[in-house]
Image 1 (cartoon, rainbow, N blue to C red):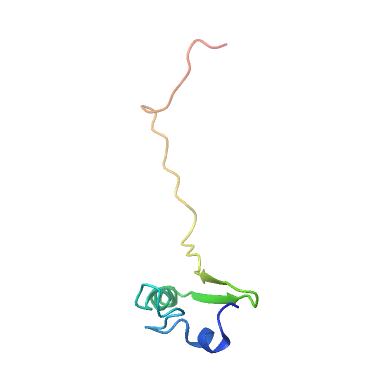
Image 2 (cartoon, helix red, strand yellow; image 1 turned 60 degrees about the vertical axis):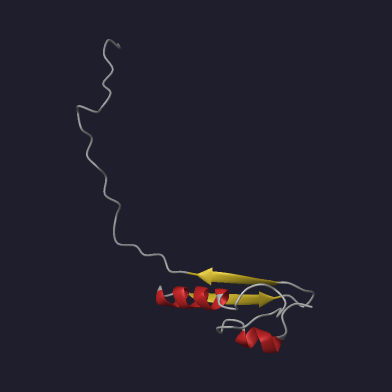
Length: 84
């Protein structure tokens, strides 16, 4: 059956439990949503009519600039000798 539309609306709120008999306090998705939001992202819910649900956390990629390349040290480089 999936997650009912009424529960989907509240699913990311604290202390919301889809199954009151399952272990847990209903904070997991709320924590994920809060952390994703603080990092500039979000969490999305896709519920299938035939049952099941999928949660996706979307986080932005932080690009600061080109990755620095460490200069090669001659003492650490392998220089083949006697070739040629």
